[in-house]
Length: 426
Picture 1 (cartoon, rainbow, N blue to C red):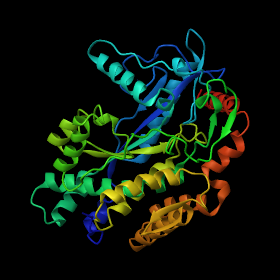
Picture 2 (picture 1 turned 90 degrees about the horizontal axis):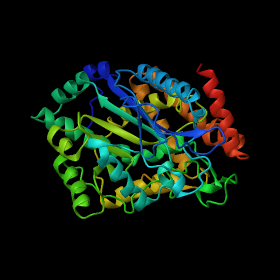
Picture 3 (picture 1 turned 30 degrees about the vertical axis):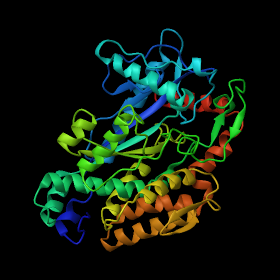
Picture 4 (picture 1 turned 135 degrees about the horizontal axis):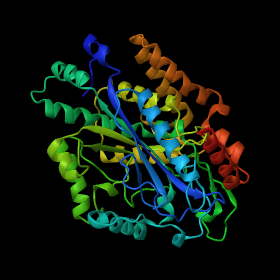
């Protein structure tokens, strides 16, 4: 299901949507080791924990433009940074990288502590720790949430041949989820920013040993946070999509839908549960493959947020395609391939052939340009040019800059960077 961009009402409303961001970061002492102080932000709805007690999760409100969501993300980030500088025990910093700093071992990683009615969240985290290991849970990143504006959905529904708006809405997001999964490799390639790790991630005794991995994004690579199997989902209807996830849970492969470590998730309004998704329908789509970008003081550049929006619009212009089991497996393999550093010799499967990921990315961006040129969308063309420059000029690729700047004394230099950003937020 695609939007008909020859419809002027759709063109008029194409940029309207709702945006939200979740950002994970580790709290770290200024010596480069993980913090062991309790979460210092109480029950703040915007500043919570993820897996670890020391893993901050910043959650923005939902806004109707990327500028506003970016502004709030920056403000919340600065609030966290300033609070950590003034802790009564000792000052802490917000670690700016997706890959963790020094880790003394599994016992050095405190699982997030919850009490009362929330105790189940702690029990669930203990289950994850036993199944996947705590170190892997330290990978931090950014999740981008998006929903189409009501005006755009109304235009699309009236232009469709579907009788039920609910069915139209769910099918639109299901089709988008297929396409976004197919093209997730492109996002990983363009935003990857985690090539270096401290040796203690691999060996408890290798604290301070710099490891330049063969990856541009370690967290999206084969050593990253993945399920022990590649999930296969049926996108024909929301009922079949939900049923496949529930079957994995019933078969014991997943504890809950939250354990589906997939690049794309469909989410309902309100309680984030698989039951509510089936009952209430799809409210928004979540993109989960973004590294923290240490080149930005808040972990992401607005240009990359805008690109995600443009990619979504482009994909909604494409015709629906099958997404067979083999194609779904290929999509996940492509992500892991795109997370490799060598973009000229690393191949992905694209358009029924294997080509270098660099060439494939350039092909997609050129196709996007043609789409937006057709509708004289200068704003979108500028956003795409920003991404093309990363491909055409290797020095502008995030991973290239980070490898050059942090390949020696990764953690020490990372601390200096985090402190510099903290000072700038005063």
